[in-house]
Image (cartoon, rainbow, N blue to C red):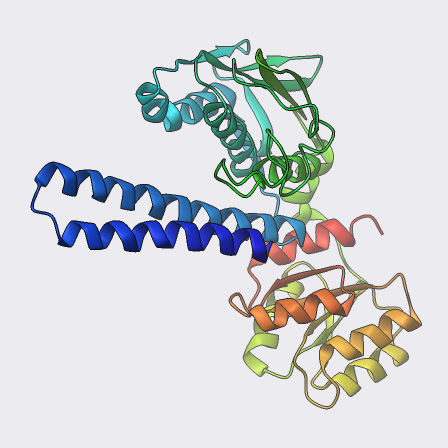
Length: 357
C-alpha cells in the first residue's frame, strides 16, 4: 500500500510543482489556464488516492460503522447519476437510469455505503469507456433489490478477471501504472457489500463492456435490530472490562456503556487489566487504551487472549494516532474504536459482538 501510494503522491506532486513553475514564467493567459487545469487535476488525483487508502483502511479494520436507515431508491439513483453528469458530458457519454421500482420505493440499508458502491463502479465505467451509454438501474427480485451498472467499455482483462475484487488490482492488469489509480475501488465495494449482507457478481467481455450486479435485502431484520432497536434490548448482566488511565476518557465511555445497560469494570494499568480479568473471567468484552502504564494495554490483552482465546478484545485508539494503529495490528484485537468513541461506534460494537451472545 505504501509503495503504491508513494508512487501516486510523487507523480502528482511532480506535476503540481512542474506546472506551478511554468505558470510563473509565462504571460500567456491561455497557457496559464491550461497549466492551472493540470495542477487542479493532479491535486484532485492526489486527494482521491489518499481518500481511497483511508477508506480502505477504515473498512478493513472494522472502523466504518453500518448505519441502517430507510433510503429512497429513486432519489439515490438520481443523486449518483448527477454526481457524474458533468464528467460524462465532457466525454460525450450518456448516463441513463432504469429504475423498475415504483415512485417512493425504499430500501433499508446504509445510504453512505450503497452510494459509495455505485459511485465507485460508475467511476470505473467512465475510466475504462470510450463511448456510452452507461446504464445504472435497480429492480425488485422477490424481496431483494438488485442494482446494476452496465457500460460499453474495454471489459475486464482475462489475466485479472478472477482477482478484480482484490485490492491493488486494476481492470486491465495488475500494477499497470499507465492507468491512474490504486486499484482499491472494487475491493472497497466488495467489503461494503459484505457488510450489508449482500452479493456482488459481474459479467464482462473484452471490447464489449461490463455489467456489475449488487443484490441487497430490501428489509434487513437483523440489521434493523442492530441499528434501530438496540436501545430496546436489555444488556442487563453484561460486563465489559475497560483499560483506561485517563479519567475523562473512561467517564465518556462508561456513560455510553451505561446507556445500553452494560456494566464497566475499570483498570488503570495494564497489570491491573490482566489481574482484573483473571478475577472476572465472565466479562464478555475487553476494551482498552493501548498505552497503559505498568504493562501496556496491547501486552495485557495478548495475555488475556492467551488465557481466553474467544474473548472479544477491542483497542481504543486516538483518531490520528498512526503509532497506535501499528500497535493495534500486532495486538491481535478483534477491532478498534476511536478514543473517545462516539455513541454510534459503541452501539454498533455492542450489536456486532454481544447481541449474538
